[in-house]
Image 1: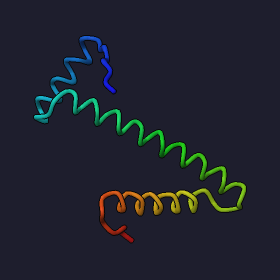
Image 2: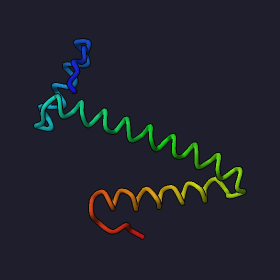
Image 3: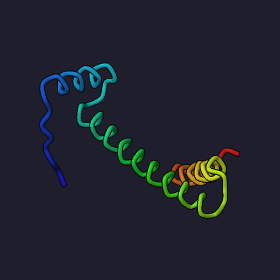
Image 4: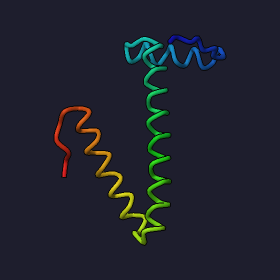
Length: 86
């Protein structure tokens, strides 16, 4: 699926400047930004869910956050084919 995005002139110029500096296409910059936004949203949703679960289970929130971070490190290492850092 493909879609066009309209940007105002200021944002378009700023993206072009970043793309030139990084020597990548504007399309790649936008794809990375969208990917990061989606991942951050997923992380926030997971942390909120973990905090709710922690409150119900009696865990301290910082313990729940630690568990989520460890889970995330393991998940990411599986995606990249590397062992998690412990």
